[in-house]
Length: 319
Image 1 (spheres, rainbow, N blue to C red):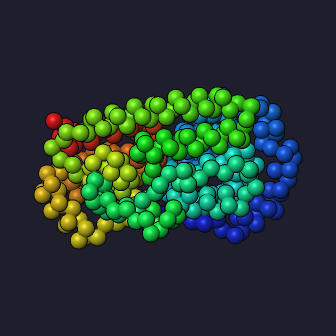
Image 2 (image 1 turned 45 degrees about the vertical axis):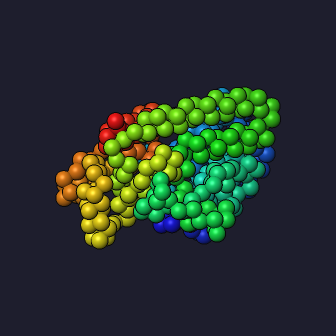
Image 3 (image 1 turned 90 degrees about the vertical axis):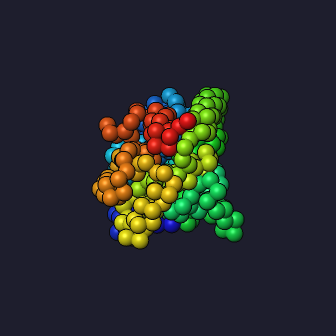
């Protein structure tokens, strides 16, 4: 998998130690006590993780995201201050192999509750041709997440499985409010189930089953609903496609009656528009929901997913 990100420089870790990282975690025993409001202090790696923490934790948690709105999460370079925050938190929720600098910080931290979303679901290797009958299952790699597609949150079914795991982790970390976490988890899982059904119904009858994206983020979604994703750039949203890949996409677009090239809000639309122009296709947004900004077609995960469904229905020709 070509997922970008840098490991934490040794100098940065040394700097944190010198600043007294051990003192940060030792002042009060926990950041909950340090803050004095009784809430569980949860660090989330990026939006899909912070969304789960906030929805499940409710008033009992204080959630901080390591990735700021509008920042491409693959590009995150974690700071010494963020490393210290992770170590001083009550819980950290992340997705292993999406942001290597976060992985390194979590591995070296003393935070008691570490929740790796990738460990809560089955992962698959998705390339440039994924979804439907084109998806290949590689069981020889076991459950290791390295080299596999991390975009599990775009499949409502897998995201619901992650939500259940997060709920269980919060119950164990904060038993006093376990009943509320269980209730909130059940409500979120039901809402994700409704979204799944909405996608199933909405994409059941379309003129085409093939869609083109700049970023191979939608392999799980495509597979779930019987579609085929053709990605220009693979799993790395900023990589440049080869001339041969571009020609293949243009030929495929004609053969499979593709009408639209999708791009996303957090990266440049230049490649999508160039290919669309050359192949006489339209462009539209298909949002991988890696962060919510003013450009997003909605204010949260569910509203953006519904916007994605409408975009797919329009591009694929809903009957």
